[in-house]
Length: 428
Image: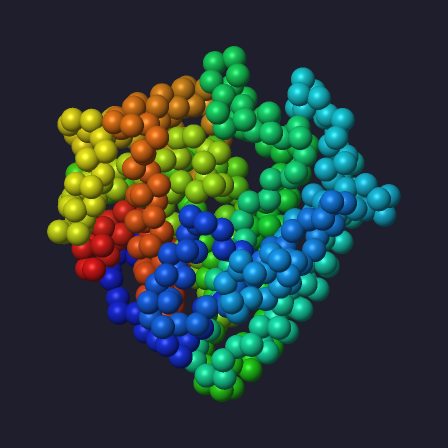
């Protein structure tokens, strides 16, 4: 696999007769917010969806009338939550129930009943496909009678909702010294097996189900000379400015990466059948979900260098706004600190494109968490971090770029690096 990055800005060809459809749910501060903003700016109609909610007994349900009042319209109220961690097997036990008695000291050697879990997984797949068919039926009824359609898949994550995983993942993602847990050891455990399977069902296989089950919709639209596009969000490292050159780097340990690779493969499989699908590998930002990965924000700081180098007047204004919140000489410190970080052997070892995704090491975790704190300490007020602001800049630009690139339809997956984002901001 080669890194296929977007390098140029194109004219958006969607217009006010077209429709953006969200397959999943829109949560504040997520990447799809930028796509929705860009679509609305073009006059496109947006159709929203939900992953649903769980009742007091843990059963998946639609949104209530009260909950619907705060949702944007039009809205398809069919719960699209995926994964099998909450699905009972014939015994009545859910995978989360089978993990209930695992103690922290014994997690690495805990043995799970994989047969029951596989049964839960198959039941959950059937349930998800049935709900997706219902969703597609409702979508067909409310789609405008003209224009092209872009369906944006936003499904990701899938951490099983069992208490034992919180302290274990805390040490895998945040542990240093005696609190360090090897992500590879975790991944090879039965708990890791459960995570891998659930991540795959939520992040990757939901895209397969969407592409398979919407064949009838594609045929209907194509007969009317209307186009239908599919896109999904992914992460597979990002090209950022290191010194004066853009280099690919990645956060580690990104355990969801194995499911992201499968997502790319699924897109490629359907792309080769002539279906207009593209998975976009977007840069690191801070969201509610990514905030659990301390250190993931380190590359985010480097966008300041990209904006100063390739962002033109607009980019320089963003940099100036950020530096007002930082201590004196912060820009030089940020660029110097991140350069030393990405060029450190401990980090380079965990950021090899051909080996992605990679597991952690004790030395790598120490370096990453120390650098994260160093950059955070450059703020005048720790409560006024520039990272949420920069995250918003990135997801807005990514939305614009995705809307442009998906219409051209040249590859099943691609990367959006800091270089093209800076160029996009320069063009505004």
